[in-house]
Image (cartoon, rainbow, N blue to C red; front, side, top):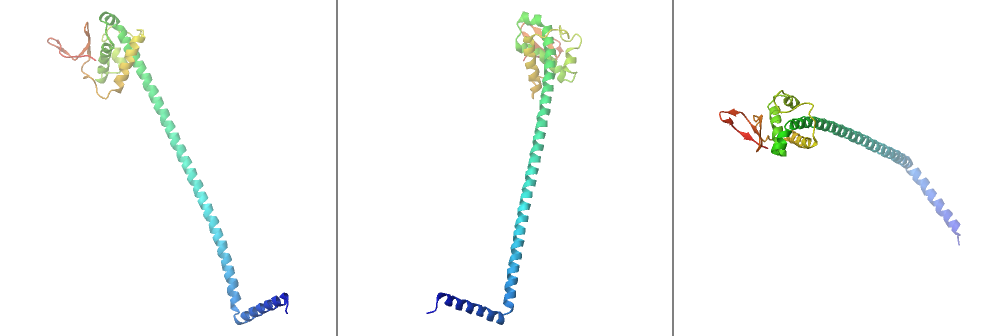
Amino acid sequence: MESTLTILKKLTDGYMEQERQLEHKYPWAEIIYNWTLFVAAVGLVISLFCWGVDIHITRRAEEQTAAFTAAYEAEQKAAAEAKAMELAAQQKSEAAIMEREATEIAKAFYGIRNFVDKYHYTADDLKTYARCVFNRVDAGVNSLEAVIGQKDQFLGYAETNPVLQEFYDVAIKAVEEWHSETVKPCDSSYRFAELTERGIYLVNEFGADGYVQRWHA
């Protein structure tokens, strides 16, 4: 009996002989095979290269998108902060203006303090008196300070009048309401104040029988 090695050797020799015969019969087969391997290898390299380029482009695009997004968000944040600062400055400026105006109104209230004490005028009465100033300003006469400072127009007013807290509290509320108004409570023609024992009223003009119309806050 032939040994296993002998059988394997015969099989190997037979396979190699068959290969030689095929090479002799089809000499171009090996060339095609080798070129097929070469093309496959080149294709693999190209695929790997394209894959790497695609990854690079994708990452680059993501980085650029992230950078653009970050820059846009930073720009929007800066714009929002600038707007907030501008609004805060505007509000601070408006608050300062209203505080100054309220101070002048409070000085005007101090000028009629004897009537306030005598007739027990309420906050609405004082607001009515302040409305006399507001109406003159709304009518385009002048600024609030200039209106109050007009000679012999507001009884007892003086720039040196003290600012009492009780008068200032009413004055600042009246000024804030005036600045926030969208609809005026009365026509700006009511520019004259009438101090009576029944309260403070605004009147629009003199008539044959006295003031023709009255208004109270």
